[in-house]
Image 1 (tube, rainbow, N blue to C red):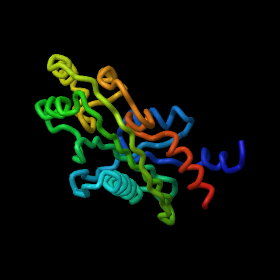
Image 2 (tube, one colour):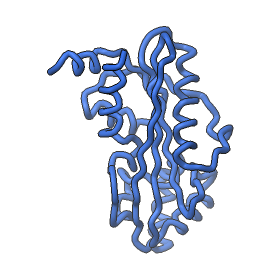
Image 3 (cartoon, one colour):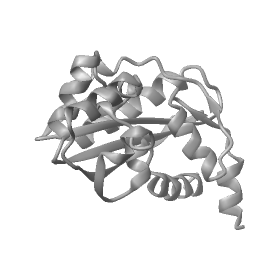
Image 4 (cartoon, rainbow, N blue to C red):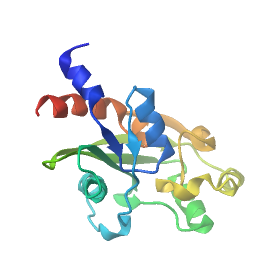
Length: 199
């Protein structure tokens, strides 16, 4: 392992997210990190362009946690689902979750995840995003009702999580699978290598 790689894994990392999926993915590639959830209100961002939307949100989440950190690299992230150029966030209730899934049924949509690396002290940062295309097969009402009854859609953008029971909804994926789960692992890993080498 090169000195650059050793430096990458020696960083104090703080994940500004309560998402168990993001934590699981970071552990998958061997990162040690602390969890300090951001309390930034996602509704405060009205940007309509999906790429800018997720990058702004990931930055705001990282900044919110940076105020509580003296030293380390804070990781902010945000995921959205886009259908017909409209952003689908987390459903407000079961009725909205059903409506989202009916709209996604039989169609292609895009999943965007933005991430920010913010270093303290100094506030040096970088932001990037990944986009993945996902196609759902035609879903029946009973499948949607059964899935919504699990309550799993309620904390997920677009009302589904590809790593849970809705895995059977997606029949085609173009791009990074882990991005759909909530974190583009490969792009983040290479961004992290660049970020720590530029110190």
